[in-house]
Structures are given as C-alpha cells and as structure tokens.
Image (cartoon, rainbow, N blue to C red; front, side, top):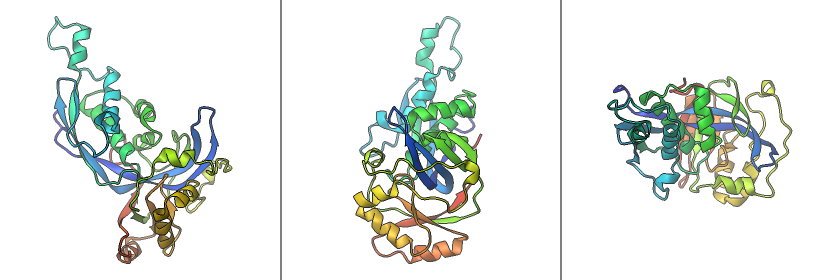
Length: 295
C-alpha cells in the first residue's frame, strides 16, 4: 500500500458542452441533460496514511469549514462503509475495537480551479478522493459503488468516477459515452462566485426544455438553460460571454461563473487568449475524453 501515498492525484476540470433542464422531480431535484467533457487542467491531491482513523485536511479552503468540504466528506463516506478496515492488530481485539483503527488520511489539496466556477472543482476533488483512497486503503469497490457514494455528495461527482466524456441524464447520474471532436478551449473566469442553488431556485429558470435521446446529440447542439438567469443576476458573466462570442459559440459551464468557447486547434485559442482585455482573466485547456484515473 506504500505505492501511491507519495504521489499527486489529478482532479481535472469539466465543461458542460450544453445543459438543458428538462423537468423537476417531486422532491425538488431538477432533471438535466448535459454533455460533460474533462479538461487537461485541474486541481491535485496528495494523501498521507494515518492509523488513528482521522481525516485531516492539511490545506483548508478559506471560508469553507472542513466538515463541509467535499474532500473530507468523501473520505469519511468511504470510511463508513467498513470495507476499508485494516487487519486487527492482535487476536484479542473485538470488532468494536477496530472501529478506532480504520485507515485515516491527511489530505493535501492544491487548488487551481476557482470555487463557484462551474468547472466541477469541488466535485472532481471529491471523486479523486474516492478513487485514490479506494486504492490506497484497499477497499476494492467498483466504479458503480463509488458512483453511488459520490451521488450522495453531489450531482457532479459521479461523472468524474465514470471517467469518460458522456451524455448525462437524470440528476446527472445516467451516462452514455459520446466522442466529440478534438478541441481546445478558452475558459474565462469572471470575478464572481455563483451559488448553484440560487440559479436553480430562480422562478424564471426554464424547466421544460424537450429532452432528446443521447444518440441525437451532436457537437454544437443546444444551449445552457442556466445562462439566462446567470447573465441577468451577474453582469460580469454577461460581459465575459459577450466578449467571448466574438470568437465563436460561447457558453456558460454549469451554473457559472466560468464560460468558454471551443477551437479546433491550439493556435486560434492562444490568439484569442492574447487578445483578452484588461480586467478579464482566463486560461487555455485541451479537452480530454478519459479521466486520468478512470477505472
């Protein structure tokens, strides 16, 4: 189990190439259709073993209590399954004794992705935590089991465990793999953090876009139904989208704030990035269709 404890584990960003709200369940959850695509840029995590059962985040996020951090919650959710207990230290230990001997971890999180950006940073971090500790603790859970844990943490977590570019349905947990063409993206980061719940609670949000079959999706299809609400409530997002549209079909990712435009190759993406006006910040990333940790 020593292998892997000293390495950095990647947590890539995602884009929503389109996002339609096609309904709402009786429990209030929105029914979505979207295509998730990973980027070759993201956060990364490193784990150090503990034998006291503690989960310690060595790099807390400003303004986010450890108990609310998805990384900590993911580690504890995996721990609670009981499938990751080490062997008893001696034959006289009881089952209740081993509860205090569950594997723990100290977690180092190196953030590159913005919080509240719509790039899936927190969800990706949680998924990488599940994928990494599943291996490091020897839990031997399959992807379906990890996805079930992930869905309890957040709707975007399962796609990072699924591990492939996919058309997603439901609350974001049913996947059909798709293969968009190679692309480079210019992603802009407006200086606002968007609370996802605020966007979904907006009374003006369109919630009845007709659903499509996964086989009918094609690159460039659709829109982001959340964009109109985000534009109206955050003028910074509107300004960034308007500038990006000079270069192509600009779209919001998730509930924002980040927005993007795709290019067929790297050179035009860099040309657009070089033209960014003062006060706008962004980065270039390549779309990837397989998660680096895909099972």
